[in-house]
Amino acid sequence: VQLQASGGGLVQAGVSLTLSCAASGGTFGSYTMGWFRQAPGKEREFVAAINRGGNTYYADSVKGRFTISRDNAKNTVSLSMNSLKPEDTAVYYCAAKFSIEGSYSYSESWYTYWGQGTLVTVSS
Image 1: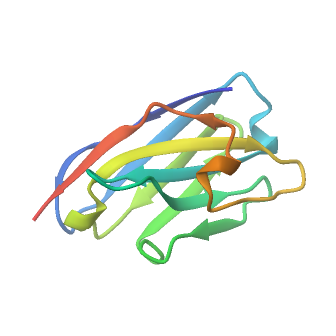
Image 2: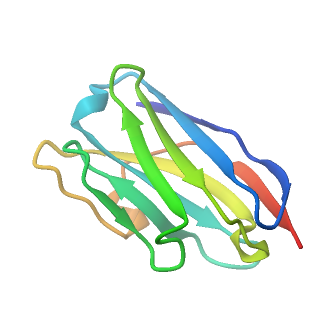
């Protein structure tokens, strides 16, 4: 499975931005998809995940501001980010793991496939 993340950029605090991740090479509908981020000087952290059934999971830091969604017809997963804060500045990565049972995890080691990352910079 190949993942290609896009949509990052430089934005001001308070605005919205949507990231997309296009998947190819697998049965997309059977994968749990996740978004992680890595801020400068910090470890990569979980942001959100969505399983094959459309159930969603969020880190507390983004709950209520970010929305993860998937379009199985287009093999894409999106992360809509509202009310962005400077502390959301990071490289955002999409990740995938085949999970017919609809499992998910906050741990990056659980995911099998990773995209290349897209940089989001939020200025104050």
